[in-house]
Amino acid sequence: MKSSANQTVSLFSHAAALKALCCFFLWITCFGVANARTLYVVDSFVITVRTGPGGDYHVIESLKTGDKVDELERSGDWTRVQFSEDREGWVLSRYLQEDIPDFLVVQKLTSDAKINNEHIKQLEKENNALTTKYNMVQEQFAELSKEHQELQTGAQEYLKLKEEYESIRKGLEEVTNSNQQRALQIEALQDIRKVQWFLAGAGVIFGGWLMGFVTGRMKMKKKHGLTFSLK
Image (cartoon, rainbow, N blue to C red; front, side):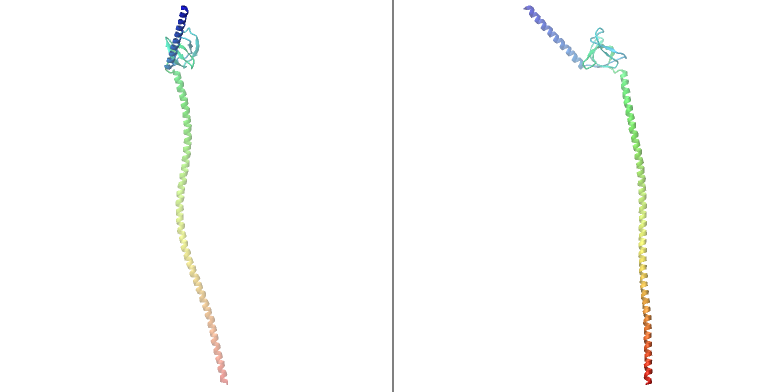
């Protein structure tokens, strides 16, 4: 019974120790991830990722220059890193650095320069289009200004012609009125002359008739007087 009890206590002790060890590793892992630094693989070669901090551990992955990893912990010359969402391993610390490698900086600058060049080309294209449109607007404005000037000149000439027309119209009206008055005067004179000619003709006819009548009466008197004396 005593041996069984000791075995039970021993099992509980091992279980507790294992549980504590798991909690410790879990704490170390969480603490390490929460305070992880971003590091970069340096130099122009490929490094190996091992299962432990030593060259005797198995290789599980290879990292190339410029790959980004998260530092979890350090042990001597080795650093435990996370290189994907669910994978981690150990690499030599001397192949890691916090600064971005120069070639990545160059790549970033080259990419930015390419993007900027494309943006500049697009801006130049838009600028050329705007310049062309501006020139067209300037030409249209010049044409409109010319037409406006011609309209102003035409309006001035129109007003001048209108004034001349009004002056000529008034002159014609005056001449017309004068001609009408003259025509009326001529017509009145013609009527007067017609009346005068009519009166003159009537006077001649009446004078001839009167002379004939008087002559006839005298002849009749002479005839009657001669007849009376013969008796």
